Image 1 (cartoon, rainbow, N blue to C red):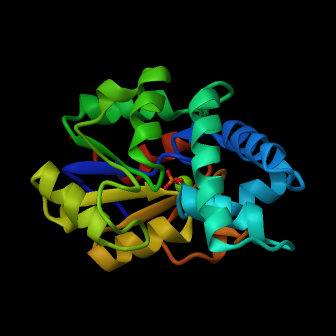
Image 2 (cartoon, rainbow, N blue to C red; image 1 turned 180 degrees about the horizontal axis):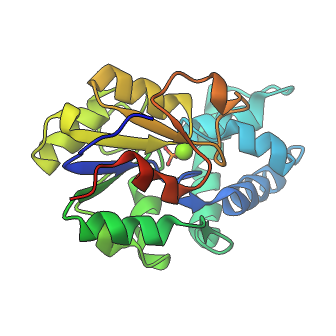
Length: 223
Ligand SMILES: O=C(O)COP(=O)(O)O
Ligand SMILES: [Mg+2]
């Protein structure tokens, strides 16, 4: 097992820190119902999460169906209205996450969230789940004009954290996290319980798999 001594640990949000699928599915199906489109199963929506809200909405509208670009743009606005109402309602913190954040903080490491979720939903959700105080830096899906897997979001987070990418450790759940970290030159561990767009997580190139968040601590040299 590889061991790291990171100055900062950067976490993905959906599927890594928080189980948000119930609220994402509720927001998506309220949108589809309002637009008179066929509803989607939670399993389908699970495989659509990972590349941000516009991508989730586009996939809900176009997979085995047709929609114009204008219809998708309108659907994004409808989704955002519904998701704002349900964001956090059925969201749960994954087992071991609070203990892990506490331990890392206790070791004096900086913590960050780097998510593809839009900022308007990220900050209220962190507050609602009472985990916002753990994080020194939050980079959301629309903080820059690009999202994960573009490494620019990790470079941006590192600038705000005042570290170089090799002094960070990324914890994520999908190829978007792994590719962003690889591109930035940052080690990356993936949790096996999250949302990986229907791709088996053990087929994604990374530095190690975690079956619960607390296993992050096994990869870190204590100080
Ligand atoms: O909003 C998404 O599609 C995924 O968000 P995440 O980057 O926190 O997993
Ligand atoms: Mg994720």
